[in-house]
Amino acid sequence: MHVQTLESLAKKGALAGKRVLIRSDLNVPRDSEGRITNETRLIASVPAVRLALDAGAAVMIMSHLGRPTEGEVRPEDSLAEVAVRMSELVGVPIGLSRNYLENGVDLKPGQAIMLENCRCNKGEKKNNEELAKKYAALCDVFVNDAFGTAHRAQASTEGVARFAPVVCAGPLMAAEIDALTKAVAEAKHPLVAIVGGSKVSTKLTILSNLAQKVDQLIVGGGIANTFLMAAGFKVGKSLAEPELVGECSKVLETLKAKGATLPLPVDVVVAKEFSATAEHRTCAIEDVADDEMILDVGPQTAQMLADIVSKAGTIVWNGPVGVFEMQPYSHGTEKLAQAIAQATDQGAFSIAGGGDTVSAVSVFGIKDRVSYTSTGGGAFLEFLEGKTLPAVAVLEARAEG
Image 1 (cartoon, helix red, strand yellow):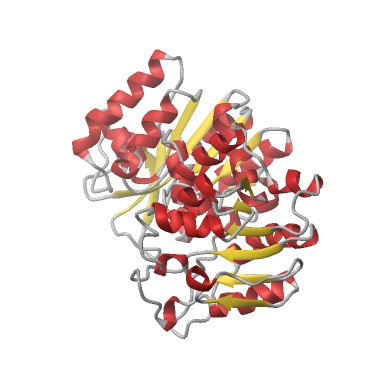
Image 2 (image 1 turned 90 degrees about the horizontal axis):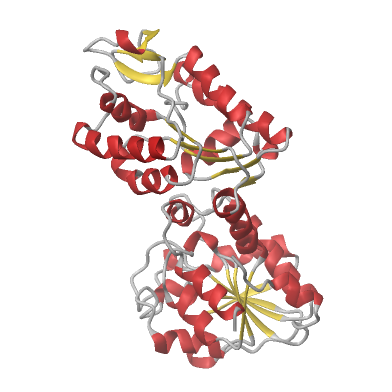
């Protein structure tokens, strides 16, 4: 994927004296008192703002927060507290503009301001063209640095990029595009994808799309249980979707037709209750009892998966292989995480994405040993599904002139 970047414009001196509108993803979690509980998205958004300011631009920062009702701004929907914290992180005062659509924005080069929650604007979610043009009229350069919203065609993500004089990708967006392209479109083989999760139904499109591209597809969690059923194994009272056994068989057929494989567990950790304190045991996959549930892969399977990962050129990781949040069932995912880290150390390209996966990367201390950890969430998943991301597509189209 080819897009123009904020960094390239800054190097050319094309931002000096310009009005730059940056669409960031500042949708941070907050507690009942409205206090920010996780600043990851704020910290990730700082480089774009800092880059534009250092290049001599007047910077407007736009984001959504929560799920407000269009046409009104309740106190809990306001970006006021986010603006205060971003001021501290960026190192310049950042005020809040509430009436920017009616009054415009008065800003000098080197100054920054936050625009109030864009999802409070009527027409934002429906990508209203009039609203998109109002956004575009605010700026000389529009920067999309919100990959987490790239799968949504909204006025602040896709619409404005059609009408702004100049458009580009911010450093976070550019990094995501580059990493995903390396991971799938330009992958170094063998390409190994790991897809875990509770239900095949939520990942079926991803599995079907990846099956056409990968050399080996590893599945975990409830997804693996349904594939085990498709292979004729009994999974006791494990979480599974018997009605999707046929779809799993299709994925297996796709893999077989291209000479790819899906390694199934040979041993598993089981318990009669979904509990960290329940009595549990390790057994061969053939020996799962009717009143037991599979909660992790066993040591033989973990080693088998680690061996596969160790030979990979590219690793795409989305989902654990067990209930890693519970210590008795964390070993399979931990073994896999360490194998991914070691493969990356040896030259493989690895990308991890999805909420549980990002948590596992943190829990097992391998963040600095994974090539790229995606912040995208839904956008990451839709990319793996093979879908076009509207906000990325418009950046590509504008780059091509």
